Length: 180
Image (cartoon, rainbow, N blue to C red):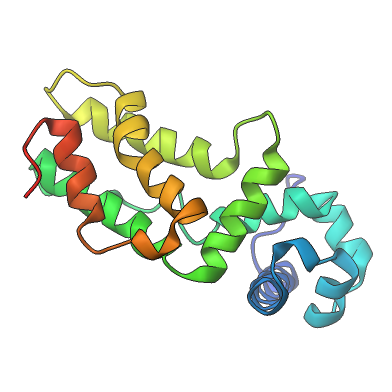
């Protein structure tokens, strides 16, 4: 047996309880008023279990902020770049339109400080995959700058502007189409 984190059994149950506790507490109190002892109490686990897995609250928030938008999930692959990009961006808009996910994103980004957050790292990897599928002359950073950045800006500063057409508008800007 190799060393490492167990992915099933008791560890999976504890992880699910902690994630649920974090989401509930962030929803109820806001990310800035959540502590590891509160999370442990709500999850019914010892705080040392949380410290052992994540080390500190910012690292935990960063991890939990991104776990539902699983970077290993299949990306849209319809054979049509525009449709794939719109589906990808729509998934991100819908995910962060939920206030708890937006709060976790803000907490995770704050905890990353000067380093790249898990969320950005995951979106950058997805952008790289989507960019390499294209014959268009754009890079993964173009997807980040023109599609993801406007979405995240709205999540953080203008959450009421996360409209159903936002993904399409961002993709159309990237591809040079005139917005409808």
